[in-house]
View 1 (cartoon, rainbow, N blue to C red):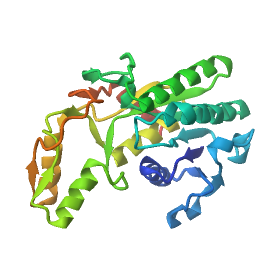
View 2 (view 1 turned 90 degrees about the vertical axis):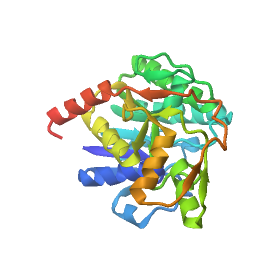
View 3 (view 1 turned 120 degrees about the vertical axis):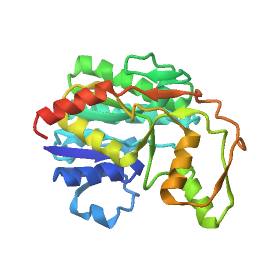
View 4 (view 1 turned 45 degrees about the horizontal axis):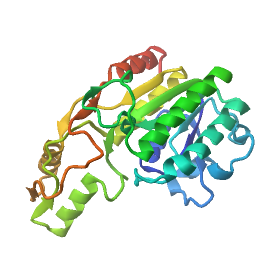
Length: 285
């Protein structure tokens, strides 16, 4: 099986490439011309494409992969930037449409839990989407566009809604890196919100395993939540990191207000993810 990956140098992308290597899968990495690749990527085929100026038949430049894992997305982590639907959305759709029209049969795209908006409680793939920021709106719009494209040019689509990921390589302004820096500085306290909000957190290495497994099914899986399925309070999560690493630091709870763009309690259901993974195992992968 030949798999191509866009955004391979990003937070999720690096872990997806590592997971593909564990499966000994031939991989083509799609990178911006300006990207400096890590030395470990030298053993992979690399194709340089600027999605804003993609060639007419990018599928052929990638040696016609069986599956495209599409992780690339610009403008993050500013979720409220109009860039997401003014520039990123048309660029993304134009590129993916060209891939399908050139012959791509299997496409996996990463979406976001922000597509669900301010809804509370457990969220399934059948839950209505109510995005309340430009990033969530653009991702949800891209999914709709691809579903309409399927009616004209049939292909298998797996739309994975990522919940909260953490681990090596994540953005420096994320919760875990901020906590690590506070410990390294020798801070006596770590300032955070009240920490009572319930979220769905998943190690990025686990998410990468699920993404690769879903890609290898080469089926029309539709929307799939990539999540733990287990709500946990942010305070409990942080306290767990502190205990696990034997760090000496206290929490200054309530220093920051809760984000207005997130519900206080929401998490994903993973029944569909479990079913898809079971199908993948039954195929012998």
